[in-house]
Every structure is written in C-alpha cells, then in structure tokens.
Length: 80
Image (tube, rainbow, N blue to C red; front, side):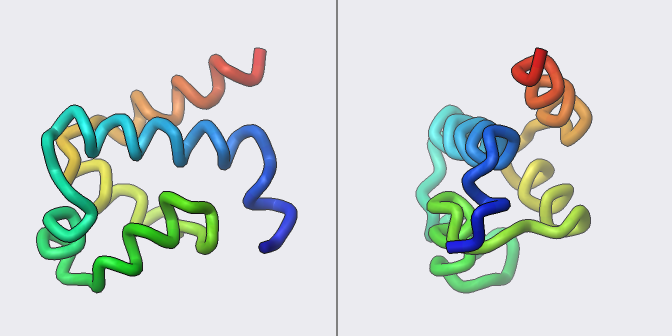
C-alpha cells in the first residue's frame, strides 16, 4: 500500500466517509450501486487501498448526504 494512504489526513478522510455511510444506513453495496460502481470500489477506498480523486470524492459525499466542504474542514481541524 502506498505510504501516502497511511498519512493522518487520509486515515481521517476514510474514517469520516465510513462514519457518514453508517449514519446514512447504507451498505458498501448500496453506495456502489448509487455511484454505478462495483462494491470493491467502495471497499478499497474505505480500506485505504485506493485513492479518491476530487470528482469521485464529491460524488461519494453527495451519495452519503454530506457536504464535501464539511468533510474537508473536519480533516483540516484534525491537523491542528
């Protein structure tokens, strides 16, 4: 696994996305269906096996019902 995916910011991002999915009451499969992707896509970004580009990140946030800006602000706050 690339070391960049082990940085605190990525760990926090993954944590926030998993928490948002769970709060929304969605499974990985349901998120994948909404995104028109395979379930493994969701599993891999949640486990830190793949990165999300900014467009995918925005689509995931919309699917989960969270504001992408709020997620980024939470990550920025955790760095302080």
